[in-house]
Image (cartoon, rainbow, N blue to C red):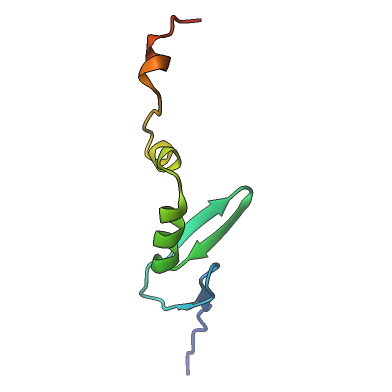
Length: 72
């Protein structure tokens, strides 16, 4: 009998078991990284500020005042 042992993955946020076919997402806070379930990923993402979300997709955050300043 050839039995393959699979590692069980749990969400690093809520501890829920992540089934082999379910998606999981890496989440980094500071120097620590963990895998989280889709529900926790959505909740963690929703906690980010608008500027934090913008920077994640490479969007520049500025103001009209900052754009009007002469180059230094």
